[in-house]
Image (cartoon, rainbow, N blue to C red; front, side, top):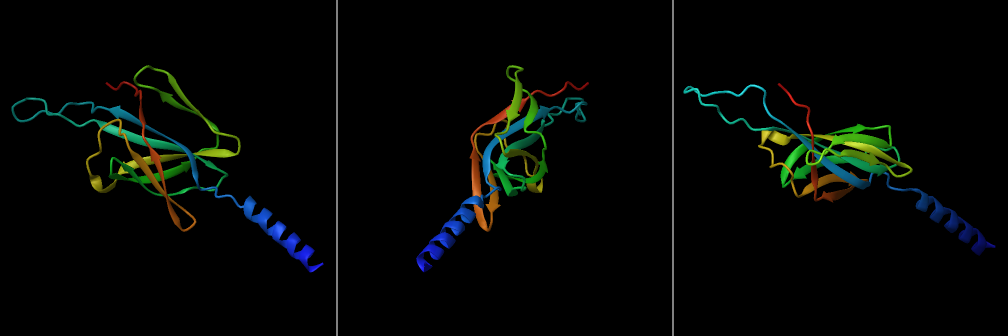
Length: 164
């Protein structure tokens, strides 16, 4: 009788542990950027135009299970640190924009039971940004008390509206 009770308790405990999923783990991620040029070109004292760096807006969409917000601590683009601001998105289907190279729509669709989160990025400590189309993006986060890294190897450029 005691063996049956212990077996039943062990079985219940194993089902409870199996149901406790880590919802903070990143399932998939997509990195995007937009490039805008300053509207008025500054000139030096001789009237020659000065080169102005392009403004690069970077953001990442991550897909996670459940509704718990992931704890992203840092994002690295080619080993350059960025601060991250996370926003939850309610819709499982997102129209991100159009690819700059061919004008195709970029649409993301979450798996059933998953949710999208948008990570807006700003350079940390006003350091210069890495070049466009970075080949290595590392998202550092925490699952419980353990550090976790998610690697991306592609960044997609999106079209920007023309400014005059």
